[in-house]
Length: 175
Image (cartoon, rainbow, N blue to C red; front, side):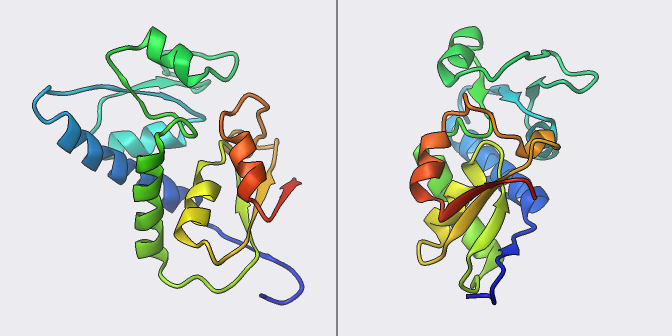
């Protein structure tokens, strides 16, 4: 244990970059014969930016200025697939399990050995925390939601909430 107080894993920006690289690699392989397949991404903006930095064509749904879509709620994966059938859903928390496993492996490769926690993980969709639990099953991670920031706010409609409850060492609200 790291003393009496868990440390916060400051990994969000790097995690988004690693995630975007894994998605871009997958899309380059899976869709190489189909040409460019756009990515639709419901986001606070960070995921869309990271995906664009990987050269992907991104249809952004966010409340940022310039976003193509201004969502007023969390859209389900089914709604996104129905509304955007020709797009890959790159929304955090909507990725299929096999891609989350690839992201987990890339997290472990990037972070190396992670001292035993528990570690506080800023959490929004829950995807990063779940990938970390896959990458480091021997470790404990605390999901930390903070509604002051769009990237870490708790949303009761997020599809990974039950998974976060199942694997998080603890859940807290507020950094």
